[in-house]
Amino acid sequence: MLQAENIKFRYKSGKFEVMDISLNIEEGYIYCLLGENGCGKTTTMKLLYGMLTPDKGKVSWNGKTVTEDGRIKNKILAEYHREVAFTGTEWCAEGVSVKANVDILSKLYPAFDMNYFETLIKKAGLSGEMDKKYSALSRGQKVKVEIAFNLAKKPKLLILDEPLANLDPVYKVDILEILQTAVAEDNLSIIISTHLLDEITDMVDYIIFMKNGEITDFGDRENILADKGKTELRELFE
Image (cartoon, rainbow, N blue to C red; front, top):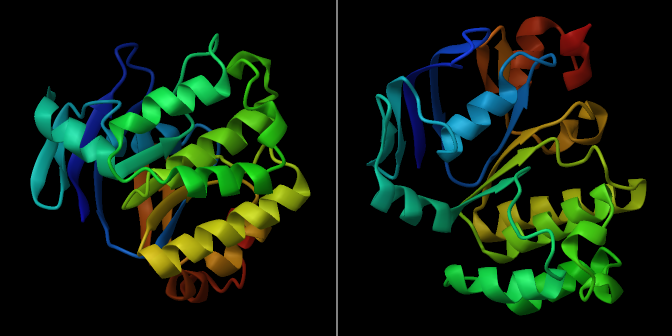
């Protein structure tokens, strides 16, 4: 499915770099990317999605190279982005209504399920907000719309960068149930980074642990926790 091979990346400022990242993301699992603030989680996710291009190494999707050694395969990247979604970006026009954004952007994705989107929006309590400008929504409302839009695209892989931070407690439970259902029924794969570890411990299949721009552990959740003598994800930070 998704492979990252020996990715290296340094910001032009030279203040931070990601070093020799290698990952293999398979279909139908939930991967949790863990690490302290500033360790490189968001940078790694952007590299996996193709928002950043590795200086060395490559990212491949189903055997096709997406980015490699500072180069982007634009045609393959476009195909890739129809099957992979990233939550945590500026994905639509702020000065346009939510409905108009969705009507326009949904046409870019052949598998987009408008009925499913509307169901998710109703569950999020946002049915009455669709005619508002996207800029008028609160941060939490924007996250709900973005997650609903990305799920309605019916992606094969969903990358979620701190998606729970601005959500109300009730909707956090709802969205986690929705994500688990999508994994079980649609074979969706998820890569999620979050500091709200108690809320996702039971749903995670694999742990990717980062420190100072490097992956220090990657494997089955139960095995990693057992190796560290822990029972919950939050204990890895203690």
